[in-house]
Length: 243
Image 1 (cartoon, rainbow, N blue to C red):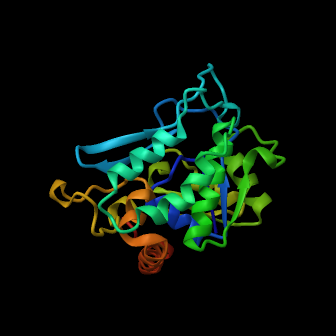
Image 2 (tube, rainbow, N blue to C red):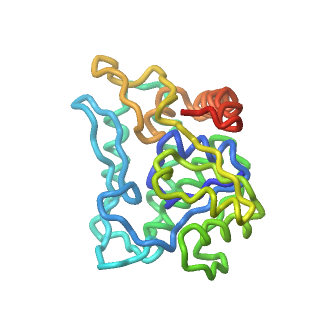
Image 3 (cartoon, rainbow, N blue to C red):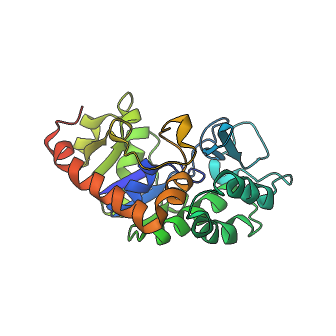
C-alpha cells in the first residue's frame, strides 16, 4: 500500500498514520508549491491558543516544491524556542526536541530537503518501516494527473493507494483501476483520536502537528495509538463502508 502526498512540514497525525502503516510513502515534490498550504507551516497549541510554526520561503511564480528555497530569515533556534515555550508543561517536550533539533538546525537550502529529512527523522522515531521515495527522482513520463499517480504506484511496486478523503473530488478511481491500482479511502479526520492535550481548558483541537501529540504521549505512545486506530479502521476501508 502506498500513500502519495506533497511533503508537509512537521506533519499531522493523518500523515504519520500512513508512515506507520503503508509500505511506501511517496513525496510528491515535483508539483507546484502552494502558498498558504502545509508545505512550509503547521500548527501547535500554546497558552494563547493555536499558533503557526512557519519556515519562510523565497517565492517565485510557478515554482515547484523541490525548487522552493528557504528564506535567509529562517531562524531554527527561534522555532525551537517557540515549541519549548508552548509545551514546557508537558512531560515529553525534550523527547520531541531531540528529534527535531538536528534537522531544523542543519542549514538546509531547499524546503523539500528540510521537510523530507524531518519526516524521515519522525518516521524513525515512530518506528516506521515504510520506504520513503521522492517523485522527482522517479522516471515519470505521463502528463495526466491520474496517469502520473498510476506510474508512481508502478514505480514503487504498490497497487493499493491509501488516499486522503480530500482527494475524492478529483481522484479518478475508474481510470486508476484501468492501471490496476485500487484506492482505499482514509477518512482520518472523522476518526481523529483524542489524547490528553496541552492547555486542556481550551478544549481538544484536532489536526495539529504531530509535535502536539508526541509532547503528550511520546513517540512510542503516539505510534501505538496510530497503529490501533488504523487496525480498527482498515476493515471498513477494505469493505468500502467508510463514510
